[in-house]
Structures are given as C-alpha cells and as structure tokens.
Amino acid sequence: MKLLLVEDDAALAAEILRVLRAENCAVDHAPNGEDGAHLGDTETYDAAVLDIGLPKRDGIAVLQGWRAAGRTLPVLVLTARDAWSDKVAGFKAGADDYLVKPFRVEELVIRLRALVRRAAAHGATTVACGPISFDPGLGAFTRDGLPLRLTGLEWRVLSCLILRRDGVVPRGELMERVYEGDAEVESNSVEVIITRLRRKIAPARIETVRGHGYRLTAGEAA
Image 1 (tube, helix red, strand yellow):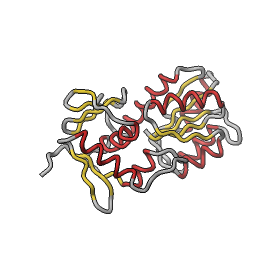
Image 2: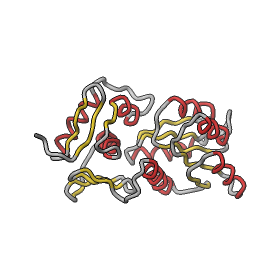
Image 3: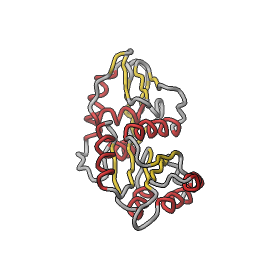
C-alpha cells in the first residue's frame, strides 16, 4: 500500500512509520495539516491516516477539503477525543474509519488493509489470479497454496497489479504507489522489479502494454 500519514506527534508518527514500513507499505509523512492537505491533493495514495488535532489546519478541515475536491481515498481518522460528537463530526466530514488514542499500531494496520480492500471492491477474503492468491487482510501472497517470498518492493508492485488484475496499471501510477515521495528512484527500477516478479509468479503473467503500463493475467505464455 502507498499511504499518507498526517500526524504531529513525532514519537507516535515514528512508531506508525516503523510498523507500516515493516509491513511493506510506502508511507509519506506530513507533520501538520497544511502539508498533509497538499500531499493528499497532489499525490496518489491507497489510504490516509489523519490525526484530527493538527497544527496549521485541523484534521476535520483537511478531510472536508479533500472530499469537497472529489478526493475519494479511504481515510482513517486518529484522535485523542473520545466524545461521540467528535466521532460524528469525523464521519460527517467523510472519514471511513476511526481510532481513538491510545491504540495498538497492529490494529491500525488491520483496519487500513480492510479499507483498501473495500475501496478496491474486493469483498472476498482473498484475491486470486491464476496460481497467485493475495490476502489483503494479512498482506500475504501464496503461489499454488505455498507462501510466496517477495522483497518489499516486489510486494508493493504485485499487490497493485493483483488488486487490478486483468486491468492495465500505468507505469507512472506504479512508481507513485511503490516509492515514498522523497525516495531516489532509478529510471528503470520498475522494469527490474517486474522482471524478477515474472520469474517468481509463472505461469501467471505480467504483460507489458506498450505506451500504457502493465497488466497481471492468469494465462499461460504463448
């Protein structure tokens, strides 16, 4: 998953970043509402984690701005406020889920995966393409029922492709979803990852659609 974290508590943000990156997520972090609003407006994310009590711009105002601009990314709101009225305000602003501090970061991960799965319209527990199966809730891939060993970048690319199986994923979108905003990226890095994945997932195929991007299919190579 490519995620946006908008959180001003440095210690909490560091812990969330550590756990999410260990789960193979690419995460951009904004420490205030203005920077978070800008990233949400200009970058592509699978989901956002948004604190309500932010400096420079309140999280509710950030969320209202995204929704008013037609941004549909799933948003999980974090807050130290446990009052029902605050929860109602978050949901009315367009939040998809809600966690009250303090919380276990592992629960945050589970909720994010569920949000992304629902947003991708995959209600089933697993998503399959040929011999490859993906459990978004666990973040686990299998090939013919056996665990598929992937690097972090391979996991990010394959998860993007399998959630859009048989559809074309533009190369630029893969770059945006796989790498964090400040990462230095080689121009051919996606092609290198695709080449490695092709060897690991056969007979499933990653097709190059010239001028457009890549498509994951279940078919045997001709």
